[in-house]
Structures are given as structure tokens and as C-alpha cells.
Length: 144
Image (cartoon, rainbow, N blue to C red; front, side, top):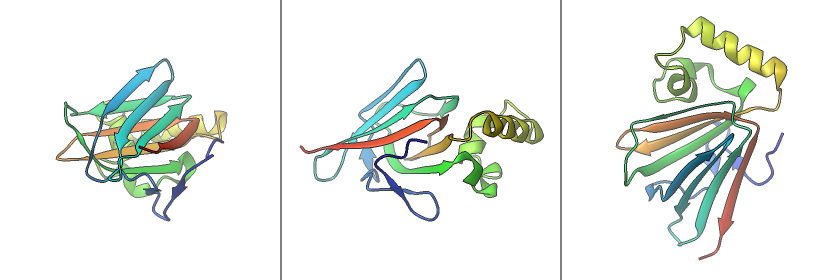
């Protein structure tokens, strides 16, 4: 499990990301990797790097999207309430694609095959969201 350089709160909120009310400057996906970039209020260049993506969904994003928060949990630790909230990690990934029972079966099978998976939820102010299930998660900060 790659949790090399980030901390989360008890609720899974990614700490030290300086993401609240920051413009998303870059989002790209290549093969099974994704990269999100923004600048902190101090001007530091921040990047969230996701590797070994197994599932992901992006909903209602456009130019000028404003980041609100990022949550990250080991897949087994995602709060049960995530199934009830449309903008949460499971709500985003499985919306309109699976019955809840089928989605839970899919997650259980993934956990059996890969116990090191992370669930990541990226929230945006004024709507939109991203959700990922991936093997690696890194937060990178470069000074301005």
C-alpha cells in the first residue's frame, strides 16, 4: 500500500493538501494513472498522483472547477454512509451503473483480489465530483 506522504483526518479528509477554494489547474488520465494539480494559497504547486486505477468516475466538471476537499480511505474503511450520498465515493462511481447489491459485490471482490486499494473522493464547490479506486496515492508539494 502506498501511503507515502499524506495524512488524513479521522473522517478521511486529506490533510496538508491546501485544496479548499483552489482552482483545478490540471486533470489528466493516462492508462491507469491520474494527476490533479492546483496551487495552494501560498503559491506552492500541489499535485495528487493516483496510480493503478481500477475504477473511476468524473461528473459535471468544466473549465474553472473549484476544488473543495479530498477524502481518501483504504477501501475497507470507506464509511457505510457513502452508499447513501450521491456525491460520495461509492455514490459517484456506481451511479446509474449498478444496483447497490451488485456494487457492494464488486467492491468485496476487489478487496479480496487487492487488499491495498484506496478509495478517493474529490469534491468541488458549485457541483461536480471525482471518485477513484486505486493502488497508489501520493500528494506532492513544490515550493513556488
